Image (cartoon, rainbow, N blue to C red; front, side):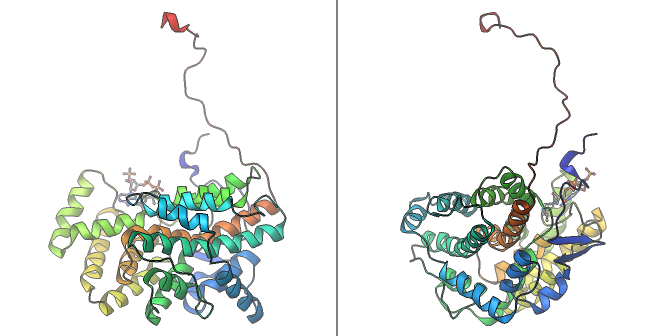
Length: 369
Ligand code: COA
C-alpha cells in the first residue's frame, strides 16, 4: 500500500524527541519546561547526550561554541563572492557544503570526531548566518565573544552591538522551541543522507535544502510576507477570503502531526504580544490574532510554530530573509543529534515506490520515433 507523504508511518526508532498526545518533549522533558527554565546551550547538550549537563559540562560546551565560531579565510572569501541577490538559505547551504572541505576530520567516522564536528557546525552556522547579513550590508564580519552566550553572540554578530537582554532571552527561547521535532522533513533528509554513511556535513547540507521550502521552515518568512501584504486590520478579511477561494495555503497554519494545536505556538504567541508592544509594532500582533481567529473558524486550522515566530523575529529587528536561516541555526542541534543517533545504529534507508508507469513498452530506435 502506498502512503503518500509517508503520513503516519514510523520509519525509525529514536530516543531524541517525542510528540505524544500533542505534547512535545526533548529527551522526555516537556518543551514548556525547557522554554521556561532552560538555555539553548543546555538544550544542545540535552539533545546530543540524552541528559542535562552539569555546570562544568555546560561551561565547556559554551566555551567550545565560542572557540569554534571562527571561519577559514576561504569561507569568508566565498561568502563575500556569492551573488548578492540570492536567498540567504541558498548561501547557507552552499557555505556549509564548502565548509566540509576545510575540516580535516570530515571522514573520521568515530563518535568522538562526529560529536566534535557537530559542535563545530553548530558554532559556525551562527557565524555564517550573521556574516551573510553583515556582508549584504557592507559591514565587517564579527566573531563570537567568550563573555556572551550563544543567543547573545548571534545578535551581537548580526548587529555589531551588545544586544538588549529581552532580545537575547526571546531569541534563546525561540531557538529552544525550534531545536528538534521528531522526524520532520529536514531531519528525515539528514538521516537518509547519513544512513548511506555519507559524512555529517552532507547530512546538514541535505537538511538545509529541505528546510528551505515554504511547507517546512520557509513558512516563517512566507508568514511575514503575508503580514506585510495585509498591512492593515481592514485588509485581513478580503485577503484571507481571496486566498481560501483560490485554494492558497495560509502560511503558518496546519500541521502534519498536530491536529489539536502546536505546543510551541502558544509560547511564540505570548512572546509576539510582548515584543510587538515593546517595539511599537502592536499592529502586527493584532493582525496575527485576527488571522488566527478567521482561519480557526473557516478552516478549523490552528497556528503552527512558524506563525507567531514571524512577528517575534520582526520585533527583534531581523530581516525576514533571515527567519529560515535562524530556524536552521536552531534545528542544527536536532539534526546533529539525529545524525549521531543514526550512525550509532545505522541501516540504509531505502523504501520502495508503487510503480504506476507503463509496462512492457517497446524500445523504438531513434530513427523511427
Ligand atoms: N491553509 C489552508 N488550507 C490548509 C492549510 C493551510 N495552511 N493546511 C492544510 N490545509 C488544508 C489542505 O488544503 C487540505 O484540504 P483538503 O483536504 O480540502 O484538500 C487539508 O487541510 C489537509 O492538508 P494537507 O496539505 O494535505 O496536510 P499535510 O499534512 O500534507 O500538510 C502542512 C501539512 C504543514 C504542509 C500544511 O498544513 C501546510 O501547507 N501549511 C502551510 C505551510 C506551513 O505553515 N508549514 C509549516 C509547518 S510547521
